[in-house]
Amino acid sequence: MTLNERVLAMEADLLSCLQENLRIPSVEGTPAEGAPYGVEIKRSLDHVLTTAEKMGFRTQNVDGHVGWVEYGDGEEMVAVLGHLDVVPAGDGWTFNPWGGEIANGRIFGRGTMDDKGPSIASLFALAAIRDAGLPLNRRIRLIFGCNEETGAQDLKYYLAHGGEIPVMGFTPDAEYPVINGEKGIINVTYSHSYQQAGALKLLSIQGGTAANVTPAFARAKIGCSSELADRIAKLYTPMMKFSKQDYGVLVEAFGVSAHGSTPEQGENAIGRLMLALDTLPFEGEIQLIIHFLAEKLGMETNGKSAGIYLHDDVSGNLTLNWGTMNADEEKLSLVINYRFPVTKEYEDCAPALDALFAEAGFTKEKETFKNKLYMSADCDLVKILLKVYKEHTGIEGTPKCIGGGTYAKSLPNILAFGPIFPGDEVREHKPDEFLEIPKLMKNTQMIASAMYEMAK
Image (cartoon, rainbow, N blue to C red; front, side, top):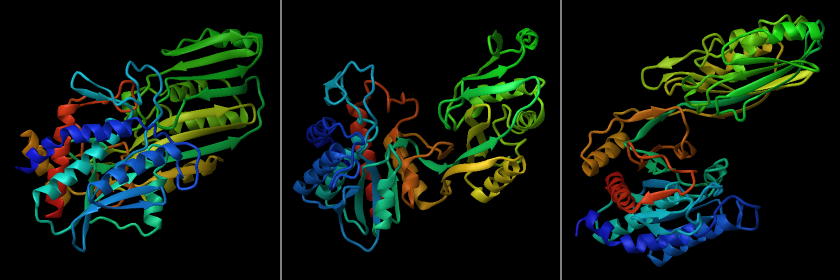
């Protein structure tokens, strides 16, 4: 039997194992002994490791943070990185999100695509390699994470407690053909306190829902006289609304939502609001702040006016998303989500933006940072994964860089490879999440081939 045939022969056992795990609602919960991310995630991990032990593989539970399964010998190790935690089911399901039901050639349930299906497929792919007796020069390790959806603290724990780093590997937690670059991601919060004077008084600003979403709505409440409110309410600007209120004027801005990694596909309502407020007769400190934000951020998505524009031919422009803004009569705060090209560094942009805001009197309150990931299209891992992709699909794949971040960033020497094929609907985190059984098996074959190519 060929490796592909051995994989197909395991279909019934793979589906049964996956159904059992899908019935465990492994959403992050209250930490408990041996269960740092909750007892349901522990149950999911225990199920996989117990199954692997029964299959005859070496296993280890790293204090409930991750578990791993290993086969083969050799000084070097290659890896497949997956995760067993899932997002909450949410509403809108027609199938039981925790049922693992099979219908119309599909398996349904939270985690089928993200990421229990591909992760458990890797276990059966490993069994197919072993049963085929294929010679290996490197060990193959399957790493099952437990905290991808809510912070990736699992892999930080693994590395901090002596976890071995693979010489190469992949995570089947994104898309094909292979993602060889992921932009660096910075979320930064700035604030500014102020005193107000003059005919207009800023009462509040509210805009945005999250740092990584282009806001589709923002509003400002402005205190002023009835006469001034009448004048402002007569203003007309596209995608804006000015309405007189008992306190003065309500200014509303409308935009188009987009993901923070592609803000150019949306229209930022906060930026539009600030540009409108910059035309009103504010005075003193608040006028300077509004003008600064309108001039330096506005509705731009590439950071040019803020002095942090970057570009490379591999991943394109730096992208800047003004995600949220909130203000009252004395203080405002805003969160910016920006992503720099894969051949650039944190030092190429972050210090300049910090200096710009500091000079304008802002305080940097908080920052989170995920570094870029990039491997050349000529490196061995990319060549291996593209070879496997072509062998199984007949398509000459091209590696791509993205603005989003995948689980690959959590461990060195890892790239994202599958499970979503080009043109497929992105179904993770949605109601009735499913994976077509033929594509589950195709993924299992490709995982097996890729593991063998890395380890031979």
